[in-house]
Length: 474
Image (cartoon, rainbow, N blue to C red; front, side, top):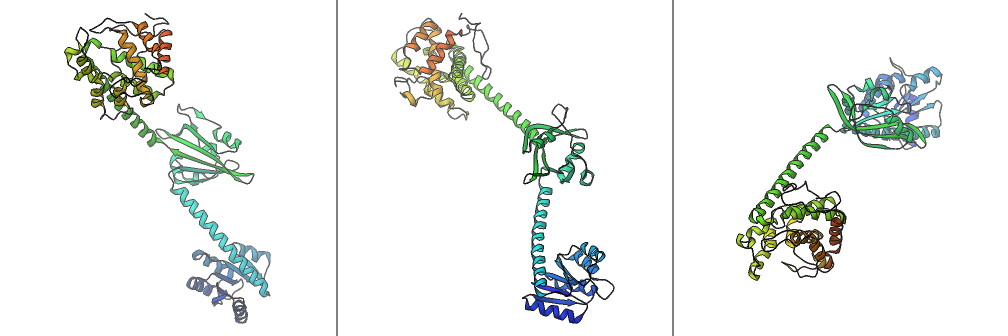
């Protein structure tokens, strides 16, 4: 440790240097006057200064210490034979790290130097921490306000100054309620929010949107409130609030973009569905009715909203592959031959081939491929069984069978809803999923009915028709 000795009596200075060397310290240099002390301190940059208060020259030790502090951060210990209150009051202004009263013992001197050294290290660490914290608070994008325990503003970073429209020196010392005025999204003042949070003594995060008044309008903000505590003692409050204008603008832009994409998807699905039924006019409306019924069944079965939407799309497109089947077969008024039936059965794979490259957020193509599969493996085109069949495909299979049997076809008259329900109930668990069958039977027995031909909306993915008829079937 390098020590600068400032002492105007040469003998005392030499004795002090000898003592310090004996205690293991390095004497960096000596000075006899206040002016010389300032010069040597700046030149040598010692680790500690032992400063006599009474010095020869134009300035004394206290004045010299004051000048040294302007350019150096170094611990200083006063050496003095004068301990009167007036001298000590002047000395305290320079924030010394200790006093040694002449005459002194080596032990007293050593203890004072080590205490000064320790206190200087601790103060330096604290100062560095404060600098880090202050720089961080001034650099972050969030606005930060702190108050004392009486609610008076103690600190405001630049972002808080910007949002509150005032400089820090205009905010400091003022009551928080005066400078931090919030309103809700409708413009009504919000009172007692901070006080209420502080009364609970807990960190309070508000997910609600608040507004700060600003020239020409208001600024939307989100707010966090935290108490500052030292053990059980409350010292003050920290408020962190963020301008979310850009985020809200981005969210609205994203929402509009998603809405446009959803509209495009809906219209694309509707166009594909109409294309399929233009090829097979005898089943016009079949896909829409199957989609509506399948969605209602899915809701009763507890499938989530996303799965229901995917099922609606698959229902609207499940017979799209029939555009590959010759029109004369689709409209043939008599029983189809085995070969003709084989061509009709290709529609599931054809639909899959059309849809598989479209990046739907649901497994639409696979559901379309599987809607003629059966639990016992007797279905087509893959002969899948039980757990290999997607849940959406199981629901769609039941809805498809019930609607198809209930409607007219070129080669037969409608078999009727009751016959269709008898079919699925009889084969529940063997051909058809039991949960899907139960949901379908429950719907019809509680009053559901298919719309009459030409009644109800056309293709409207996202705007389904549930077909309920005031509690009775028509």
